[in-house]
Length: 584
Picture 1 (cartoon, rainbow, N blue to C red):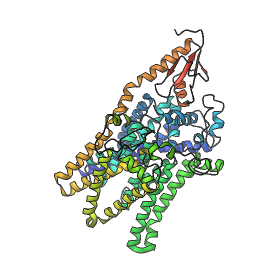
Picture 2 (spheres, rainbow, N blue to C red):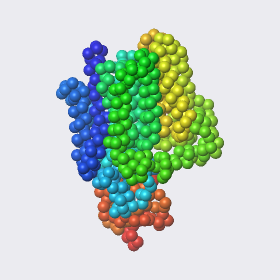
Picture 3 (tube, rainbow, N blue to C red):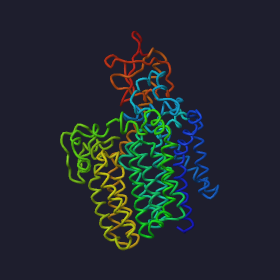
Picture 4 (cartoon, one colour):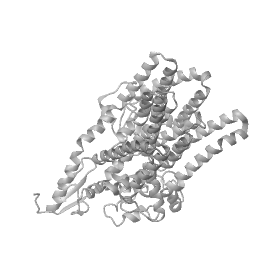
């Protein structure tokens, strides 16, 4: 591949990733701006975001219409495929069918979170009136807001969870392009490492749900990529893109969930501390101030954008209503999630003990574990294969093989550090600093035994792969390449149960739509009451009913001991036919 063709390919990869990322970012930015003037989410939001993303990609491609054409064909194809797949496979998760869909559906129905509370909006709608938990109004709403833009355009709320596939694709192309631009890696190596960064057991299990841990992981990865580029290539040709990735990832990431504030703060402060120390070594305080002024302004602008602009529907409204920007996370009215939702045996443990017990345990999605289920690395049981695909694995959720993979990766990183201590001191220092950051996080942050809250751990084996590939490209040696290929194969095998489950969901999705068709036919000939049975109410399922064109029914409570049938295999709705009527 000639240098010119390689540069064109790299620019196309970056432009494509930028296009996909901006569809999400511009959807959120446009929606927030229009909320300020009282305009709710409309069918025009998503097309306008696509148009804005196309303009940015055109500018990035140096106003080349030919290059933009290729990006648009690929990008619009990925967008359509993401929405079609997400819309075809119904969400099978608890959280997705409760507050995630509840918030997204309300936004698509005209709720303006800047003007009224969720509860005031929901009160006139009987199927939403039970939603009184504090998080409906207070949680950040990035994923739900994008889903609402999709829902109001397509009429299918399930398509809204396409943000998972879209973010993964955008992050993949951006990571691939940025790695290739360093000239340290061959294109296939960059593609492998980028793919294994975004395709993890957590993200793969959540693809067809409204869970947004994969989305947050993608934003953290983009922020890390931008910060790394600014560290090793200051003043490089892609410096504006790196800064933009930091800005967008923080702006969106802050509004995925409250815990993201802590994760981004740790990451950015670690890098800023590293930069400060490096500049002080070079030229003292005056040198550091001059060199870091721009980066400080970038990080400050990113935080302000995430909190005051995109975050106005959560951080600002929470401050005005509850005098607490992160209401429900800390302070009065907070909801204790971590301690109550980790397995029983973990609850009395310290944070680091919980983490190590989870990492070296059997994969288990249950909360009721009476003793730590220790296991040898690379061993697994049939039970673990059934537990691994859960979208919310509580113990060893990084995958059934990950404990062994982690040990190999740690050994590779330690060996590489020993070799590059003198030849590449900047790599040695930053790797040591980032490793210390991970260690201190385990020590002080609760909940990192829960894999979906600690997706950064997946970057440890990817870092080891990058070091092995760079080492092999520079010095050769079959052993290094063999180790890299074995590590790649193990990471793929570690993801197999999760990927297999997603394929099974796609295969069985017809059943859901057949149930909805049958219910629609039933409502056309009988008096049908549809509602929630028992203590649990999954209002997200009601949006599926309305999206299927089912209107001729009565909504109301149903006795779980006296009903005609159910729809949806997981977290169902109940229905009852009026007495004396027969099903035709």
